[in-house]
Amino acid sequence: MPEQPELDALVDFLRGALVGETIAEVHLGEISALKSAQLPLDSLLGARVGSVTRIGKFLDLEIGDAHLIVHFALMGWLRWYAEVTRGPVRMGKGPLALRVALKSGAGFDLTEQGTKKSLAIHLVPSRDQVPRIAELGTDVTELSEAEFTTILAGTSARIKTVLRDQSLITGIGNRWSDEILHAAKLSPFATASTIADPHALFEALRMVLDRARTGLSGLPPGRIKAAEKKLSTVHGNAGASCPVCGATIAEVVFADRSFQYCPGCQTGGKRLSDRRMDRLLK
Image 1 (cartoon, one colour):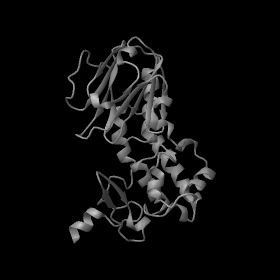
Image 2 (cartoon, helix red, strand yellow):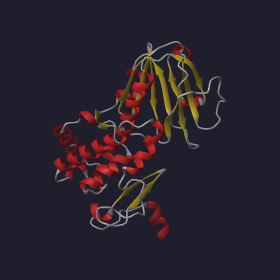
Image 3 (spheres, one colour):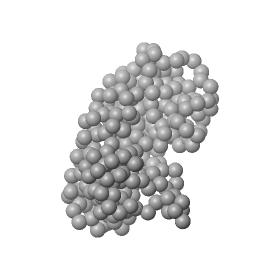
């Protein structure tokens, strides 16, 4: 799922590529992706792109008097084309959710891989009309150390859960919470309110996200996902050796997701309970 560093890089690209352009065609490829349409898609035709912004893990395209707001979920992304294919698209075929063509000839597809379709597109007069946006907490780029410390002190939830809770802090997801906790040498299962050094964790958060933002800055959409993997020390690297201590990076799987951590750096050499592996070992 794209998080603050990836989305900020995408926004930077789209501001240069989209702002000031006029919409020529809009074609829906997956009807389930359109979660709310208080305006018809055709209302975008002939409208000019005014701004591109990020709100938490949402992308907001201001087009004329409308906002095209996208939440990419786990497997969604944007594909940019210097020359986009024109004309109607086949509904429900492949990863295509929405195609937007510009009068200049360029355009983009909103896509989602896999069979589980969770990508969400909203076409509304105001961003405030998307319910989940109203529930967002402080954006991670605006988070002060004092507010962060207060958030930790006020909850007995696991720190991994707190970092990913969009009602508390917006913009961090599974990948960068793994990286932040590895940099801070903290177990993902540590209780937030009992963390001894919130300052060190806040510094790790800032360092990891700044590094990711710098590493992704200036990249086109087609290169961002590959680059984020290269910037990840533990996330997605289960079974590899930790570059810091040499221990084998471990994994915990839950539902349809997983997270990774280093037992050597983060848990005193102990492996965290993984329900999937626990069942296999019984």
